[in-house]
Length: 76
Image 1 (tube, rainbow, N blue to C red):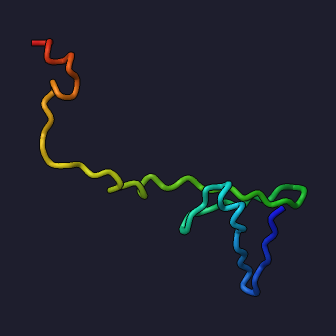
Image 2 (image 1 turned 45 degrees about the vertical axis):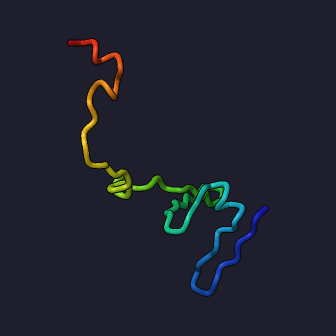
Image 3 (image 1 turned 135 degrees about the vertical axis):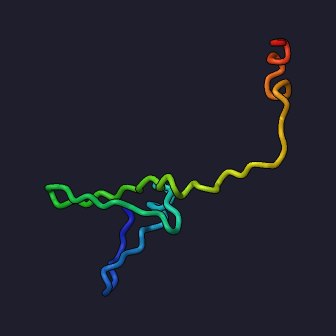
């Protein structure tokens, strides 16, 4: 079982094994939920939708409809 030690500033480093399983990377946010029995659950937060802005680029130019769907050229 992975173990973390708290610093004097109240910070802990999430052990590599846990980061790997949770697919956590630098800058990721996590939510900590406290249960009634005193346990703490750590869950990665989904990235904000805005963080994907600009992730996909569009190349200039046009593509003929026939090139997108060969069957569509038979419509005319």
